[in-house]
Amino acid sequence: MEKFSQYRDRATGIAPFLPVTTTLSAVSAAYHALVFALRVPFFVAFAVGYFALFHHLPLPVIARKVALWCLLGIPGIWWVDLQLDGVKRGTLADQPRHRFPHGGTVIAANFTSPIDVVYLAAIFDPIFTVAYPGTRRVRRVGLFAAVLAALAPPPSAADRPRDSELVSLRQLLEQYPDRPIAVFPECTTTNGKAILPLSPSLLECPADVQIFPVSLRYTPADVTTPVPGRWVSFLWNLLSRPTTCIRVRIAEGQSNTSAASTNGASTNGQVRSRGVDAGDVSADEQRVLDAIAEALARLGRVKRVGLTVEDKSAFVKALHRKRS
Image 1 (cartoon, rainbow, N blue to C red):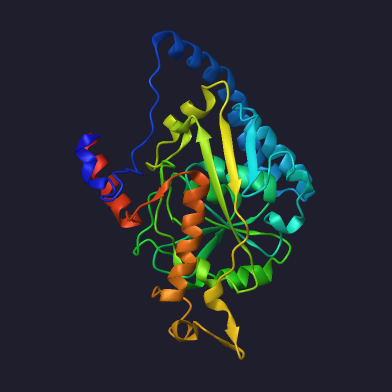
Image 2 (tube, one colour):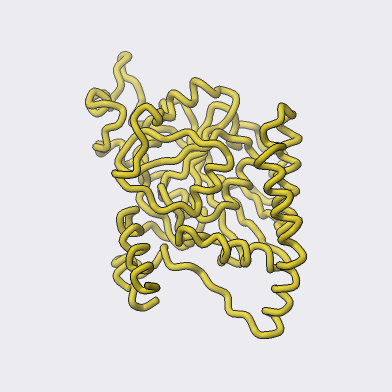
C-alpha cells in the first residue's frame, strides 16, 4: 500500500482510505473459517427475513429494535461501550433525556461501517439520510439503503440525485418531529482513523435544534469498510471472529449558531438567498462545522484531515487500476 502514499494526509500522515487488515496464523484461520461457516446461514437468513419482511410490518418500534439487536448478536456484537462525553461511568442511567439524541434532534456520526447504521437504528430509531459534498441538502433513505451506502462508491457531483429527491434537514425535522435525523456528514466511509471535512448539510439545522456528534469505533477495526464493494471481506471479518466490540461516545448537543435569528432575520440569510443548495460557507458557518468535526475527532481519539471525497474517488480508481 506504499504506492498509495499520495493519499495520506500531508499534515498528519494518516491514510483514512486504506483498509485495515488482520493477519491470521494457519490455526487461527481454520478456527475463523469454522466460525464463519456456522454463522453465515443464520446471519443471511435473519438479515433477509428482517429487511425483506419484518422491517415493513406495522410493529411497535421496540420490536424492530429487538430484532436489530438479534441481527447484531449473531456476529458476536455483544458488548458496547457507550459513554456520554463528560459523564462519569456508572451514572449513564441518571442522565436526563436531553443529553441523548431524541426526537427533534440531529445525529452527526462518523461513517466507517454498515454496523454504524444498524447500531444507530437499534438504539435511536432515526431517520437516515445520505449527505453529499458541496450541498446543503440530503437524500432521505431507508435503513437498508443506508446500510448499502456504507459500501457504495464515494458520491460525486455527477452522481448526485435530482433536486426533487433532496431535502433539507430543516424539512425533515418538521416532517418527523418525534424521531432524530441521522447524518453522516463525511459523505463517505473511512477506516476510522480520521475525520474528513464535513458536508454543509448540517448548516440547515435551525438554531434551536441540538446536533449530537456521535463517534463509533470498532475493535478489531477490520470491520470498517473504506473501500467500496468489498462485501465478502466485510462479512468474513464480521462473521469469522468470536466477538466484535463497539466503542460509542456521544458529545453534548451543539447548536448551529450561524442560524441564530436577529430581529427575525437569519444571520446567514445572504447565503440562503442563493438557494438552499448553495455550497458556499461563511466564516460563522465554518466555525459550526469545525466545532462538530473537532468533537468527532476528540471522541474518536483521531485527527481531522484535509482529504476529501474527491481524494477517495481518486484512491479507489488507483486501487482498481493496480488490481487490473
